[in-house]
Image (cartoon, rainbow, N blue to C red; front, side, top):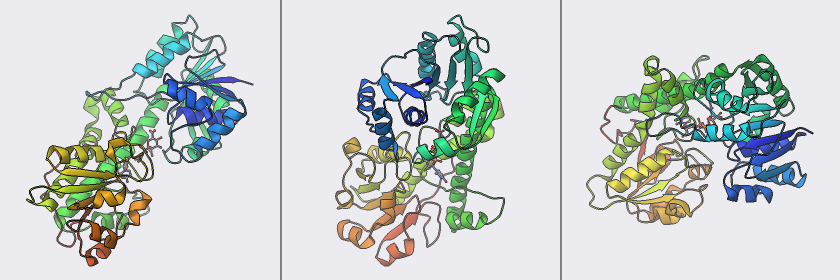
Amino acid sequence: MQRVCVIGLGYIGLPTAAVFATHGYHVIGVDTNQDVVQRVTAGDTNIKEPGLRTLVGAAVNSRNLAAASAVPEADVFIIAVPTPIGADHRADLSYVLAASKAVAGRLSRGNLVVLESTVPPGTTEGSVRQILEGSGLQVGRDFMLAHCPERVLPGRILHELMQNDRIVGGVTPESAEAARGLYARVVEGRILVTDATTAEVVKLAENTYRDVNIALANELARVCMRLGIDAGEVIDLANHHPRVGLLRPGPGVGGHCIGVDPWFLIQAAPEETPLMQAARRINDDQPRLVLEMIRAMLGSAPSSAVAVLGVAYKANVDDVRESPALAVIDGLRRRGVEVRACDTHVPGTRFALLPLEEAVAGADLAVILTDHDAFKDLSPLRLAALMRRKQILDTRRCITPSVWRAAGFTVAVLGSGRDGVPAAPIAPAP
Ligand code: SAJ
């Protein structure tokens, strides 16, 4: 049985390790965090992803998945560590480079190394290859090296890991073939072969496409609020066209991918990417638009309390990384507004989260920032009985405004200028 070492047991690495371990590979997962190693060794995880805990438990029980804190010898090394961006918007490759060094120390003839982490163009053929060849072995002759970007959607990771088509980019053609053979056992979608740099750019292009499309929706939201019409309706109707697929406006783009990856392309060609840079600016400005809408709704009341409904970056996940809700909460606190946040998925110990009833009790305004299923069933009568002022701002299209207005609420919906709401004079995005 081939020994696969997966480096990084996070949102991507752990599901990958568990899926490989249940498809005929012997897998050792490596993480620098001792707590993660202990949990996985016990067949457990605190990553909330449908089906993951059961799969990790089954894989550990079958003895095909184990966890360790140091990289062992193996036949295949899969690097799945984070690539955050720094304050200068440049990729921080320190985890990728450290993992590559650890692999270089264990590399032997016949090995395959796969980089799954999202990286700026040229990283696999450049620094990763250089570090691995520092072992004295040569790529294509002694070992194989490929970039196979992860492209799975949080909330659907296990399904997409197996069902999505997979891009395999080899540093050499033999490397691509070796990587294709590795994934063929677990992937039911097609495996599409290319070179490593093309594979890197494919991944970045996918997330940039989504970022630009969301920026267009957010810009349309501003236009429609100014025109006194509803961007939601415009988008729904436009999407009936067979060649139009507009995404949705919202409080901003969160998560560790879509707001980050375009910067890796921008970094590679700053002068060639004005559209990508504009999309980033527009999406990053959405929390400010939400704050402006809140300010207009609160008016000049001396001390106000706002119930924030949803802190996670998107619906039905517990992940708050880069969540636009954090920027909104920060902005409110800086203005001296009392914030009471509630999230049905994020653990309550974080951000002093409150149960729904406590968050809305005595509040002057409720703001929906995440479209968790639970917020789609909110009862206006229940909230009306608890709040100091009956006001709600929906940035995610969770509620039916007419129902809430009938219950006596002042309602604002991000992107809608209907019913006398532009709630705020909208300053243009910078
Ligand atoms: N969002 C909107 N409007 C929309 C869609 C999304 O404002 O119409 C916001 C969300 O609320 C969220 C952010 O964008 O804050 C990103 O959410 P998402 O669901 O679009 O994407 P992620 O970041 O969870 O996952 C993406 C996926 N990429 C694509 O769909 C092209 C996933 O397949 C990638 O694997 C993942 O990035 C990654 O790891 O790169």
